[in-house]
Length: 538
Image (cartoon, rainbow, N blue to C red; front, side):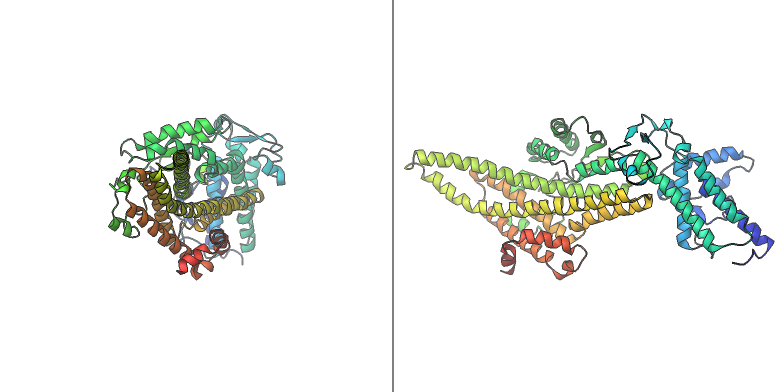
């Protein structure tokens, strides 16, 4: 570009570069007259500050507010009205990110527990960098309190001086070179992103927390959740009490932890069980499910309560994260993990109930067969009962087959596959914003490939799980006079729902989507002998 056209233009550029220096070197928004294109989301109270206030006091007040995590997520934005025409929006967003990152690095939270590299020269180089937070050579040691770490260690003064020098060189240039300006902004953004990566990934042990979320929210610790469901099985046969449901569940939750979680798992203390407020319905307990009449069953796809397997369907987990991990694990991210967990725990509970019902009835069948062998003349009733229950077990096997394959597909083909992709990205990426994007892609893939984003499929799957639970409970009550018509109707509804599921999953709309390769894996398992294909066509 030509020389600065006038003295006024030159002064304007100096003001802008002073604002850029304040923002990108110190993380301070110095814009008393609202001339800068980086703005606070809410500018209030500042205009009322007395002009006679000491400048240092003003900065202290600003920094006190700026340490809030809300300033990272929604505290600042690019004002298009104030953005000069020679600065591209992409460049402005890089300036916005760099300033926010510098604010984080210069204002460490005084209560966080971080890790410190034993050999800091290795943590920014190749594979050593990854080894430093995965337990390899140059492992990290845990600091008791972040107050032992200064902002100087998070952002060395030499790096800040380097950024300052780049901006001063541009400020004192006789011409504004757009390409040089954009190159300098890109370099500054890279410096900020790398140091933020060092803070979040290395010092805050990001990979350890990702693994913990996989263990608990994605049910990778299957033995723990199997034990928890077994310990709480009798409790979950009763309707939850509105006031004590959460407290009632904490007991089996802690028992399962004592039996399966070792002392070396330092992340379990961050996990807590929650039972969010739920609207109690009379048809959600096991007892009331038994009393569902024919009209209720026929309206399962339309009733507003069809999404509730029973009153315990709202079981959820919470995960406590400290600074600076809130930059990465936002409320929206944890909400997605919670959504997947609630789906997986319902699926695992359904699978366990199907197995338990089979175990209980097979035990009774063996007793009946033993009685029959001992006294064949007087055991005709026992033999008749055995013959009547055989069709039930064919239905149970069809239910177990569907649930088992769905569970295997989600845990292995989806979760493990996407986890390996994420780990590759974590090892190869040195940029914080790249990691955020990769992690968002990871969560989106989990939700998409598990069909949680397709309302018609997720509703059918919830209905199928509900029918499986009804079937298990009805079969166990068979000896006490369960309604045969009810069991037949459950069977009929299950066949309809499972065939509808297969028809939707093999539809051309899904076959042409990005989830098609994974969908084919699931359909191949489900229909390996063409059973579902024949059933749906009939």
